[in-house]
Picture 1 (tube, one colour):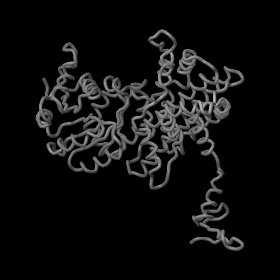
Picture 2: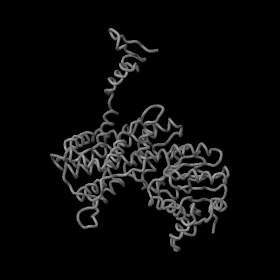
Picture 3: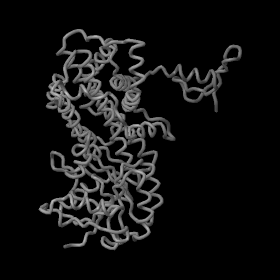
Picture 4: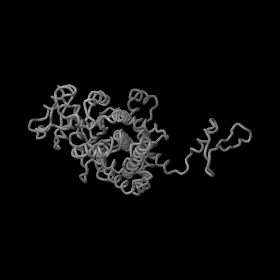
Length: 488
């Protein structure tokens, strides 16, 4: 039996599954948990007949026993609950040499990873890696977003193993790539999750419009989603939405989704995305679709208040008039345009972060490429995003790519009709509205914010720029004649 040169620390389901993935792929790997019982339980749960079990090495004892087995210059994947990573590092790193590699695989706030990387510089080669795909992804192939010291260290120490265990896209390419320095991997994973929030909310609003506005059953809406999954909207989330909507309830009366309470929980990554969009020294980067998704989940949690208010101000939904088939076609186009809008926001946020935080030149084509399989937002149109940024890496934004520019131009009226219909039907569609308004503002060469800036100058002497000549100006609003002066 070969001695392992890598270890998985953390034997909850994700860590155990990830370790088995490595073993399945031909790598010997040590299994470790802070409690011996959990290590043994994870190992014993694997059938003795499993071919990969011989490459799994459970370690009973403390972290020093693990280091004795794997080596002071080994590779250590840490997949513990976010918040517990630091205590593992505090104990582990002093036992390692500067040639060791430590990978934080937790669902960590990127700023914590960023600080860890700075603290551990010169001690070990530290990576923060976003892992998407859940328990099944960890076992069969996740999408992974590692950030760390350099491409060279990644290629030498991690690339072979991570390529082997990663999800494979339709063209066989592994869904993993070096993202950038320090916290870059966890930042990109955070934005991935923010985009996921937006996608899910847009799909939920589509369902709500068909349910309340068109009076369709869960089964009928599931049929629509299943059909859409054969076209431009082909994606994991559309696929599972059809599956969920088609699921009968165990009582035998109706469909399961009709019995599920309308309270959607959050783990925080969507909120992190919004907070970080507001936190640049260079200003705010807008992600309104993601904000709408987070806000909707927050309002959903106010269930008791909503139920009480529903009887005090009754606002029953209204039927959507007109051709039902035509409206469903509009919904398909509106959903696609809104996805383009949402991804434009998310990609822009990543690019802004790359500049602000000196992550290195984050490659958008590569990021889109590794999202094509293994992760929650995997979708057919990520192939097209990949090709768009390969063809033109310095695109002004996603909507400037010819394919997506044409899709928005051709589908915007459908999105507008959907938003109007939602308002008339009294069905909230915050993400659709946010996506539409982002497009309209982004393509506007004259917004109403000239008045906003004039107001700021009036009450706070904040100055303004003019359209006819350069410089900053202030009008003395309280003086006779309201004279204007140039501020130098």
